[in-house]
Amino acid sequence: MSMNNKAFQPVDPLRSTSAPEVDERRLIRQAKRGDERAFRMLMEKYRRRVYAVAYGMVRDREEALDISQEVFIKVYRYLGTFQGSSSFYTWLYRVTVNLSIDHIRRRARRDNLEFDDAIRRREPDDQEALVAPTFLDSNPLQAAGRKELSEQIQQALDTLSEAHRAVLVLREIEGLSYSEIARTLKIHKGTVMSRLHHARRNLQAALREYLRERGDQETLLRKKTTSPGRNQAGAARARE
Image 1: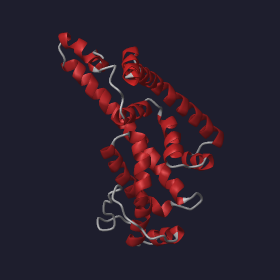
Image 2: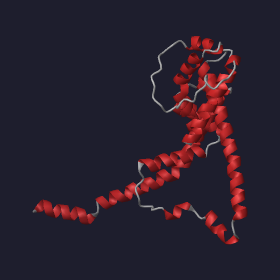
Image 3: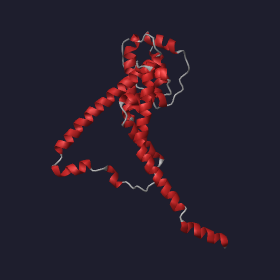
């Protein structure tokens, strides 16, 4: 199936639309024959889910948008090779996960090159600033809000390996079954369960210190609100 600019126009995966429910197999057959409208209906059906998987993998909005576009361009080009031995969304998720992993690896190589370049440009006196801990400026008594917790979860996800992150995203974000994840990633069901177990355990370990500190902060605040002086003053007012 040939590719042309008119056939494939970028679709914003965050834009809300209400694509009509149609027979997916019929759409795939029509798209294979070059029906541009049929392919766009497939895009409308899956674009938000593709974006969700990509974002869960790379943790960056702009990069996830780029991956979403790459996914549908690749699917359009190779739709003729889709034999239907697995479901379409399984094939689509596999393409999404693989492209996301490629982006993660390219980002890691790019970051390493930029880091090495920054090291070479720095004067010796600047080395201490490079490794200075960022938590020195934080206030340990400040209560953690929802935004902070979200940022901590994203950082914790970044500590997971590509394989662990993939199964966690497909299970927790997309709600796929163990069997569906196994077919998507082409691994055994037992491997899915093992990776998911380790992914959850590693995620909890990455968050444990933050949650402990947050618990200590809440305990301290509760003690302040129930201090003896305040209780005595309240009792005196009650007697009056």
